[in-house]
Length: 115
Image (cartoon, rainbow, N blue to C red):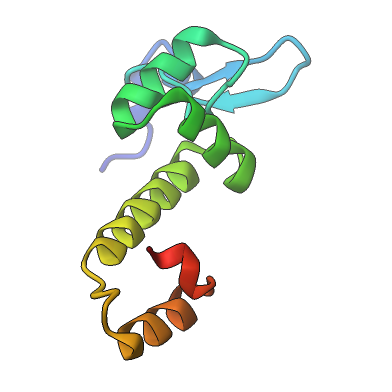
């Protein structure tokens, strides 16, 4: 690349930045579509959007956000883990005492909660 080749552009690199200023002067990173990576429980449209995206009820979304924080990435990982655990619990042969003992230790729950 030639020296001074970038001098021909009449705009600054910050013109194309994906960051936006907040009212308090901070900056918030946004995705290409403009959707924030944080889940705002105070906004009904946000709750509806993220509930539909993760395929869970709004109540489960709110519980997940309270558990792991407002980051969509963390909530997604938590929801997937919960669905995986639920699928595992459905496969447990509760009629077999050794299965109940093993899985109750693995999930760190009482044997009664597995049924």
